[in-house]
Image (cartoon, rainbow, N blue to C red):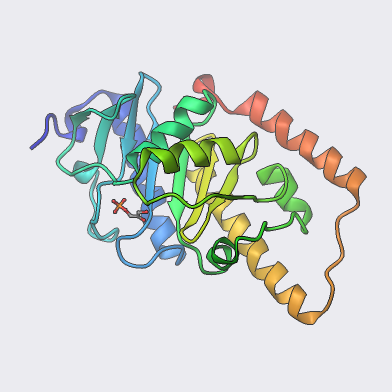
Length: 231
Ligand code: 13P
């Protein structure tokens, strides 16, 4: 037992733990990961963060298995060991004050692009609206390393998703559910682009439309993400 049970902690920590668990189980149910792969976290808003535990099956996972850490990664509450990708999650929260949820997963089609080290182009309008533009690939760094976290935060820029070379996908959002939605949009787009390339030479969304929708993305992020919009 590390510290307090997450169910005994303050209401914001408890609510974030529930949101993280719900999102982690949905990520598994949607097939974005196999077994215990992937991880999910949420910003509590009191300077702490709630993470899924390392190497635990999602179906059996309970809020008591989740872990509350401070900004340096020190465990404050929960029974489990925090995800081995703790550094990656904390790097995203450090980089963007408005981000309230982070999802890391290994979706099939997006991971093909990560292995081929190819950008997923914003070939569908919704990608620009929800992700902000193309999904770039950051350089390879060892799973769980501080370097991977720094590289992900740098390569994601002001968008909601980035691929990790030969590994998988990281997405951010206003809360954990929003970050999962971003992951699903990326995976769907990767699948569509993969298929469209088999059919022929895919067309592109007009540049002006992309610019306008990127503006919509920025507006939504600036006006609806952030501590004041959290439960
Ligand atoms: P954890 O089980 O430690 O969260 O690791 C899973 C994973 O996907 C590492 O990249």
